[in-house]
Image (tube, rainbow, N blue to C red):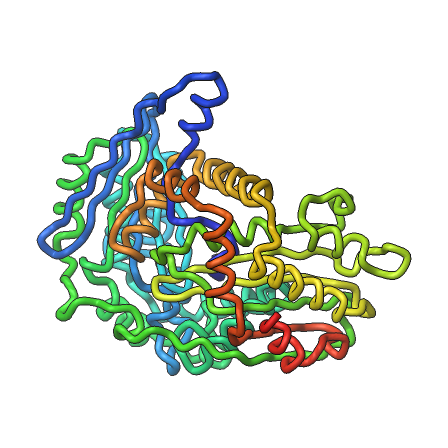
Length: 472
């Protein structure tokens, strides 16, 4: 995973049981899975949630350290380290490791985001002990051999080439760079190519010793798991991990500074133009996190390939689909998004359009839609529809042990607590039209705006023009 994905995983637990009971006309919740947490003496959090009736489990380690923990001199180290985790340990050679996982039938994976590094497996519950042993080995005993480093360097450079072809990734990387210039959130996850070429074993070892600390890690088990057994396995396999010498604070405890600025890359070879607008958004634990999601739901999303739009309940979708000459589309797609971090966030609209499209038409439509939210010219029906869509998306995003483990792990390491499904549901239900209007005036009115665009950016209105539109 190369970034914190837009609108990907709000910090809530699974609500599927509510919809299941509601769909058959029952009036009460089904019994919730058992969720428990414990903390070891080295600060490591152990959390489990039982899913009755299953014989499998997802177990993994979530670490509060991603590309934000890189330094300007070794940007890309966190991601580089993830690649080397499966290349052999002091106890297991790479062939031994691969064969062991194959023999167990486990599914093992890892990813790096801007704030987290994650290693997890999905396995039969009878094999939990061996899978945790493997995870511990990968985290604490990786060999980091020079030959493996050089081999993976070439792989990562190829990955960088592939990412450069993914224009949405490019646009959002540039957006972070301009909105959080000269700050840890402004760096890419892969790192610049010139630094990928220079990262060495010392960089990797220093990253581990600096960031892999007990109080910044959580062992999560979801499915057919016993909490006390999971705690004992955590003591057995992770007791050697040290706690931080001083309590860890993201960015040293200082809040990131959001800059209203822009980056435009003219590329006449591209058939389409891609653009992202952003204001400073909400953190994972912000009290208005769910209100932001409801507001974004009102703005909506649209894709020309789906073939709908003129009858959409979203005014912006209607404009995107029919606002051009002879009622033709003025964009190929758009998405209202929110990307959250532990202490800040980005929110806005991402869109793409044909290279000769009049982008001012769509920018004006976005500014008018934000103005509509601020003025209160929205209906109760729109708010309730967005709330229903949000609840459904939460359910659909958490439909197995792996997605639930991801939700628990991210919450615990990024916020220090887990919001229960019932709490999440109540917060969404309590949001009113006035809450959305107040939120829009707080987050959108006269705020600095960051802009990232690639393609025929000559068609894009000036930053000054767009900033002036934020006062509507």
